[in-house]
Image (cartoon, rainbow, N blue to C red; front, top):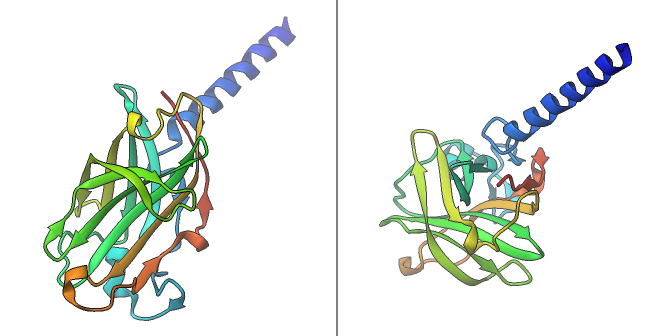
Length: 206
């Protein structure tokens, strides 16, 4: 009898731990990516000061999540030190890339001096550098919470099935002069995830 009781208690404990992990994964409190801050670099290579002028390009964390009442949608969030909805000089590119089923995908949005572009999501080439195809999706650019959110139909990213994994999550931000500025065309400043503190995969829930 005692063995049965102990067995039941162990099973209940395992279920509770499993449930706790399931509900906590993919949230602001338990993100897939945690980056070091104050790490925006010149050309993505050279540390510089002062960093205070580039809080808008310094991401803190990235997480994926789903909602039970919207099972066909994947949400991706990027939190920055400070998100500004206005750029006076530069073009800011906010990007999150990942891999599912050996295919590279990316979600991105750009902030120009003229304002924001649409939220976009698409398929990348084999090297993960250029978009083969992309579509407009919904999203929010919230300068109160400092969070960018992409709201993505799963049908546009390979219809990932329940319990399958999204891997190789690679968020980054780059800053350049807009193409119509007449100035240099390459990326001037970058926040890349080579020095992240935490990185892990995301498991599809629904």
